[in-house]
Length: 198
Image 1: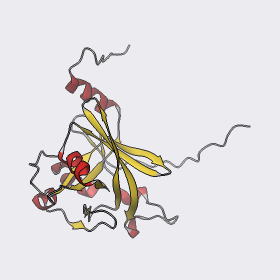
Image 2: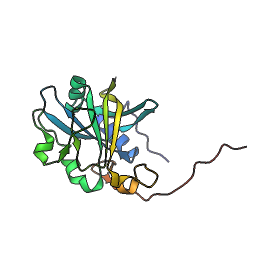
Image 3: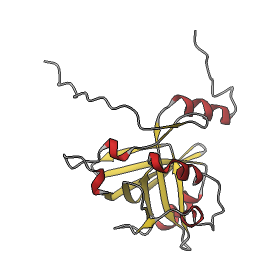
Image 4: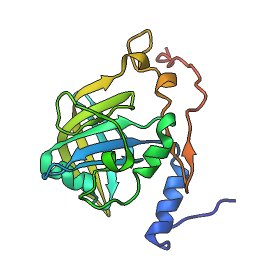
């Protein structure tokens, strides 16, 4: 027996709740931008993934038009900061609906550091910052898929494993689940990808 959720019969907000409670966990893009007037902005987005590896392109989705999207369209730049377990309260606080003239970094006391290739600052406490220039914005229904060309990935040295790649345990990434639930770093299982059957 299954319960069916038909989008043709449900109000949009209820369908949003069904989808976000079903597609879990979702990594968080903590997106920093700067407005055309120079006001910094920081907001978390849990519809986030990789679009392409060659060339490197990442994406996040803004449900409705928000300050981050407007800033990116105006300046063509943004940074995706990895949201981590020690920063959970601050990440959550930055999801509030601030007025567009409010600098969330200043309002919430979040330390910044300069980016290498783009104007928006990085979150100093984030172990990984992906600096991007705008690739394209794709409108989809009530949302906007924001795709960014990766111009550099800045990783704190202590977050690198022996193989030179980011270490999941050191990143301690947060995820979003359904309702008001957040996911903490899960147990890691090592499995090699199988070879092609003979």
